[in-house]
Amino acid sequence: MIIGIDLGTTHSVAAHMTAEGPRLIPNALGETLTPSVVGFEPDGKVLIGRAALEYRVTHPERCASLFKRHMGTDWKFTLDGKSYTPEQLSSLVLRALKDDAEALLGQSIEDAVITVPAYFSDPQRKATMRAGHLAGLDVRRIINEPTAAAIAYGLHEADSDKIVVVFDLGGGTFDVSVVELFEGAIEVRSSSGESFLGGEDFTRTLAARVMESQGLLFERTELEAPLLVSRMIQQAELAKRQLTRGETAVMRVPNRAGELQEDSPQVRVTREQFQQWTEHTLARIELPIRRALGDAQLRRTDINEVILVGGATRMPAVAQRVTELFAQAPHSRLNPDEVVALGAAVQAGLIGRDESLEDVVVTDVAPFTLGVEITKQIGAELRPGYFNPVINRNTTIPVSRVDRLSTLRANQTEVRVKVYQGESRKVQDNLLLGEFVVKDIPRGPAGQEIDVRFTYDLNGVLEVEATVV
Image (tube, rainbow, N blue to C red; front, side):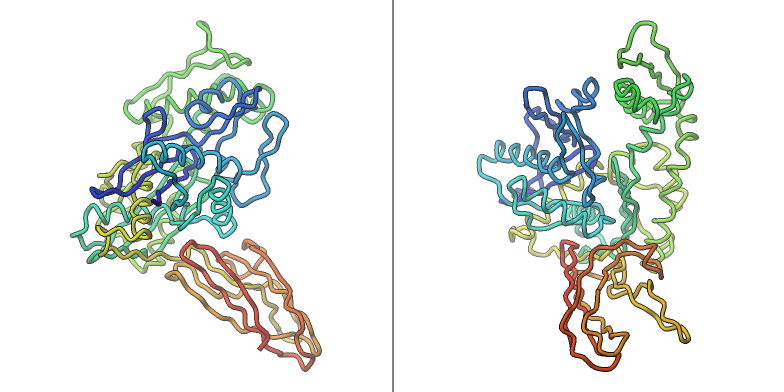
């Protein structure tokens, strides 16, 4: 069996396909949401999920969270004197979800579909696949989170023909996708987003503002009194949820040891204050929305529905801003914390050729423009550093494209090919994905030709190869 996994920044969820449709897989505590937190006790015991989340409050130096934000980078987490990569920590969460699935289903689980933010880069997607392999899983497909949500809604409302916007604001990332649903097909027309925008940013802002009211600077205190800050983040998360349901919340400020006492200062926060403090964070959703609509060549009046995905969309200010931007109220008929995992399970069923899914067709797009660095001749001067697109953003995948390059100098026998992703005309403003050298080019006049082929697969993973013509 192939299971679906939503590997989230703050929580992760697993699901499987049944004859009645996708079903969530509870963990050992009977909960469907497993916190994406890892902790290490002094005796070497590894804590995952709820246990690690609670342990983090009193032992922040022994716990790691938000590691999804650093996937595909050289970032290391040092815990108890040992270094761990984001992939290693993610693999521990995936292993726990795998164990939960095996306990529920009574069979060995070796295959999975794992979701990632639509705006994840090539290195981040490859890192996610490595994490799956470290957890003992064959990652059969990497699927974008908004696409997974659209699949769940598309299966749930199969008779509807419409254009929807999937607005996905999770714990650490933000994605927006324009999706067309018609005759059993789910076609992603465009995607945009931000990899460092989510509910956690609202939580930390709330904690920082309350600390400031007591004369404490967040960054400095995090270094000098980490237990105080870890307790404040816990308080801020609780207050954020209270402000989702009501108009006020009370936060208590612990001492430097992170202890809450009878005389601990209390700070009353209103929903209006919270929204004012986080307005600059919320405003960051607008540019990706405009970009996604523009790439799909649509106006907001062309959108039939806006679907909310991700736990952070429960904040009233988010729904209010989305309503203003689209001139219609968004909805979340399926649980925003669970819908991505349900869609991943449906995708797993499609790969496993589940008979109940024969008529479902899904297409997705490349979220970034991919290309190479070239040198341009301007007058008598050669100027390097220009970006030459090979695959444009929001091209339907899988796709393979060839671009023909040529040598600059006579008798040039080597060419260094630098591969970038981004939207700027200058490579300095784009992300370098990798580089390689094409050798054994026959000697001759300038202009010897090389074909560079970009292949972007269904997982959103890029392969580049070059051939001397």
